[in-house]
Length: 271
Ligand SMILES: NC(=O)c1ccc[n+]([C@@H]2O[C@H](COP(=O)([O-])OP(=O)(O)OC[C@H]3O[C@@H](n4cnc5c(N)ncnc54)[C@H](OP(=O)(O)O)[C@@H]3O)[C@@H](O)[C@H]2O)c1
Image (cartoon, rainbow, N blue to C red):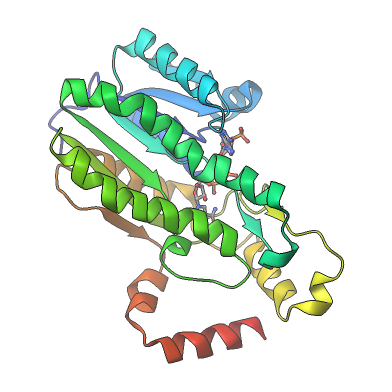
């Protein structure tokens, strides 16, 4: 663990809500400078406390120009960014054939290219200082295939693979890469999710409504503070460990099951 977090700066995307807001509050409580990024200043103001150590920054991470300005603002205020938490994101559900090309590209623009935009700006700065940590918030859905989540999973599996590879090239420059993998969390996530719209899909694909209901259950999942604690642990770790599972049980079980059992469980889950 780092000896003294004073004067350390973390930049957190998606900090206006849920896991990002809980993480921003935790880092502030621990004495860090926090750059809280979201698209809506009113939400950043309502959901985060007043603090001289907090910079609220409005940026859409899918826009590289927004990201460049956001990082410049952060450096102007706090001199450097020690930790990047790439957390911003939203869900997208539905059978692949009923999702439009535009919905899919928009999703990747945030969930994949948005994370890369932040990393492209911050890696050279971290490399020159020979230190930094990048925490990418993925999901249990970045390791396990759930039905009707193919595009969300493609993005999260993508960030998992990207992180697993890039850590080797960044390690030589003193930059650590981590992934935090939540299960279901009680946030605005399902409300903010995109969804396939065709009226045909419900009569064409079995179990979609059931899965949708489970995903939208407001009582399911853990509090975002539980995930924020794992984000913090990953951010201050000096170990080379990449993955920080933060789901209740799925990641302890599913990756070790034979495929025949996984298929039978998923079939039952969909009925
Ligand atoms: N909740 C779950 O069950 C769950 C499970 C596994 C993984 N996760 C992951 O956890 C992360 C946080 O989600 P959450 O549950 O905290 O959801 P949330 O409450 O809906 O928060 C999502 C945050 O992402 C921001 N955001 C979305 N698109 C953005 C963009 N293009 N540019 C900038 N900010 C953007 C939103 O900011 P605005 O104010 O601009 O809308 C919001 O602050 C996501 O990566 C999600 O995939 C969530």
